[in-house]
Image 1: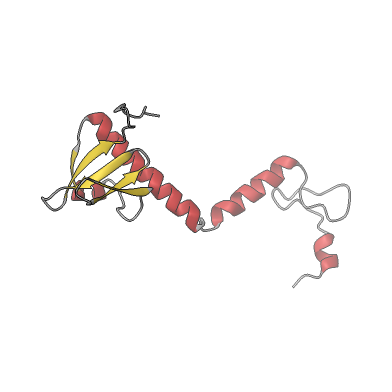
Image 2: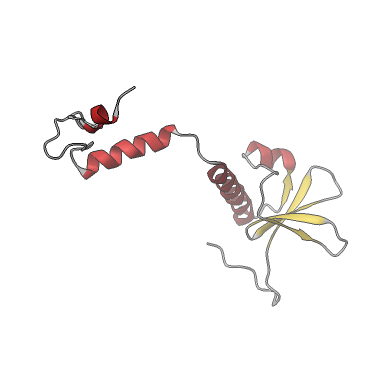
Amino acid sequence: MKSKSESANITRCLECGKKLPGRLGQKFCNPNCKSAYHYKNSKLKEPSTFVRVENQIKHNRRILKQFYLSGKLLLDKEILINEGFDFDYFTHIGKDKAGKPFYFNFEFSLHELKDKGKYRLEIWQDKKGKKKKQG
């Protein structure tokens, strides 16, 4: 294990290996090397739980938006799963008039039909009946 004095006497850039002029303890020859070094190291780390959940929810939304824009509003669960949709990730839950829950991914909602494995895709509407703008 390196002592503090050894690690403070770094003489080469950690990214490109160039000799470092200047003060003791310097680790990088320029801001570009520093940025590249930290970028590479961040890519090696496992994404946090928050990042993984956020990415899956956004992926689910992209899938629903794709189906909505293509006009396909009755969906098979199997097709959604094959596209990479994960039913465990959604933004919030609503209830229909009968009290049956449906699941939102941002403005898109999936309503399970009586025919198991089938879903109806809808877009959120405000109280005036206007559909939310796509973005």
